[in-house]
Length: 335
Image (cartoon, rainbow, N blue to C red):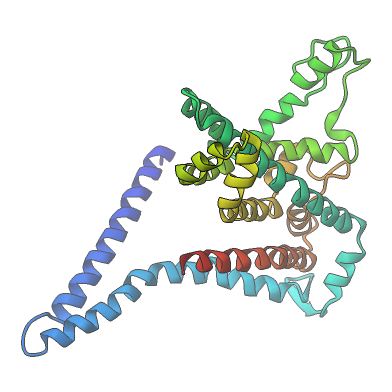
């Protein structure tokens, strides 16, 4: 079957199934189980109102349980097991975690993830805030925002391929197609550089890709927050003699701090799970390993399900406190 036709059929079945489920569930609830007629009409309406939200939530709860809750518990179980020949398993307790923490590649991945966490959220949020402020009052600001937001529409792998061409290095006697090497030679560089093979600095070259993508997200959210600041406070600051820098840092920033925190934590979660960029550009070589790529190597290359599952649990443990804190702050804002 042609992929386009297959996709169309999937959409029709998916959308039609959802519409049919909700329509049929409502009909069953209102016409069969709790009909709104007769002496018990009022009680039936109340009962139907109590059950209806659970009917609507049932598909989502089932899918969450199947694709989120079950894999978490299955991964936790596998992290305490060792896979033996013949598809047999043996319980080894914390041995997988002990071996994992003793591996230099895991420690390298952990340190690199910490470096990504320090640089990427700060840079993405900072650039997003800067762009939101600078384009807010410009006539062509919406065009600039659209261009900066455009990378959000590109997949991580697509962005990695684009930047791999930016960092591309050809022999010295051949024309350079990589923009960075072309500029490097144009301004007096002695020879083309293999930018992705330079230890420590290559991690920053990889981070640029994620910063480029996430800046648009930060800009859109923070731009909306800046527009929500009451004009009266800014006008009062101008009357009191505040300069633009004082207005920005002492008036605007304090009023959108909660939004900045939300953007920061959202980008932090995306950074902790980064995989596609590293996999497509270096595959963890030249000291660029990260936790998600390390997990992939263990699970699908080394076929070591125990250590692969253990590394997955480490990623989940690192993400969970940030998620909990984010949810707590969101609920606090709603009160």
